[in-house]
Length: 407
Image (cartoon, rainbow, N blue to C red):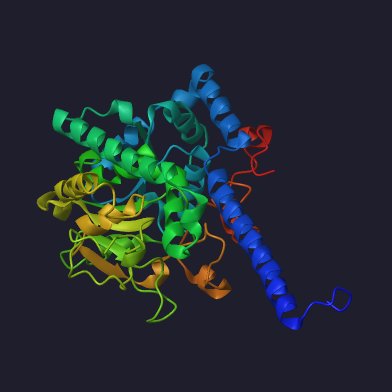
């Protein structure tokens, strides 16, 4: 300034402009990095792809890998309501193995557990091979492919329409996602959910058809494949839902002014007149990932038809009713049918970069949910919490070793 004989005012304006330019570059780099982080979650690690190929080969050449699941002497348990039934909808063999092994390891009475795994056609062989060759003592595991269901024409049409609309919603946000969308903070960052693989996952959206998948069951615990169970969950089956259809964590362990997940306004567009005005946009949305469902009450209700009604309304509104994802239409369809359960049944958000849950809360939680892009089987997963999941991986398994899973 002295050498060029500039006045202080001009120097101040120039310095401010330089600082503002650098700040914009930093913010732009952060936005791109966040988008790349979401995009990274769409990939399948080479080790998991290897694991599926090895298991599919094992299914083809090893008769034991094709053995009946469950064994004939335990088939009657699949519809026996005196047992505790757990449902998983997944196409991830490693994740399913962790869910089941962690649940069994912490169960007070594992012989009472019956696991029902529903998967797609391409994953059926490796999934079946894994659980046929890695049997768990006294535990019943059923693996069923979607191609093995004989659904009515009405259900088939409903599933097809549901998937088409969800695909259109995700494609709408994905195709319109630009860097400018992130300029306004958290609200627009929710659009990044369109980059999440769960947005287009067939298995993720099929949960609305659980009553049709299991017509002989009356009460089940549903677990996502990105959870790990840390304590005995048997008391969930004796939980009184007070006439409601779903038991879910709604309130938070962190007090009155925070939520265990997100608020309704983070999912729904309350500026649209179609969204019910009686909903409190600042109230906490219930958590998926670990839920207890009363299937008898569900069948007596119009939940599934209401879900489809909301999907069609979203289609007709130009996809402006909610953010992309499987939960928003479920929040609307299940409105008034949710029974709050103890907050420590589930701690969620471990697949995001920042979690407010401390060590004591993580230890006390019955179920940890790695919802978010950073799944524990991905390299982008947080090392701080990844070990809580990976300790349940069977590293002694020969296929795990050959494919160098999590190495």
